[in-house]
Image (cartoon, rainbow, N blue to C red):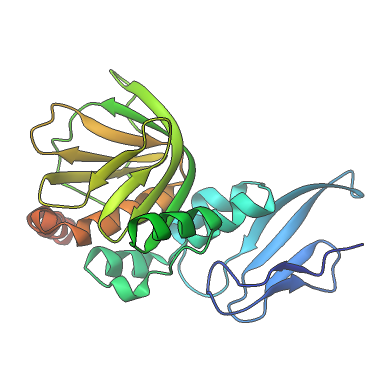
Length: 243
């Protein structure tokens, strides 16, 4: 039997329903226009893989560069789309507009909420955590290139959650990184994000995400941590001078 509803709640707008259209392989949100296509093999054998055809109205440059070229299963695609915001919204989040953020409603996020009593606003799946080069540049949420692999020492793998007050990285070590004044730097890359803690001679890298996810995490950290405000102002000043 053909599935008519892909997502009861649209992961992009949190309002509509993503349902099958007249085409047998296309689903669309009835509110925001998110359009998803089911991939096929030889035009008849469905592989259960989906890709984004359109995010609807808005400037989604970062998300288009990475996510629209990927074919994923329904559940991981839903999580990845849940981290998609327009470029204007990302800038607003970095400036402190938390009301833009959509809460994560996955089962894993609910478990985090129950255990910590903290809302979860970002979930990124299947990341590798490593210790690498310390951050010495101005903090930024705009990806500039891939994560530097030199001297990168892998620690573990897991899913990253950004909650009201911390990073939560459940794995065999269950890592917590508080979003407080001891976090003195953050930088987004095209395939990951790094954070720098005061007094540590290495930065903590989370690798293997999409560029739009790295930008979202870094924007959230920039807004949450007061000690990064100066870096954000310096970055904005450099951007203005370069125009």
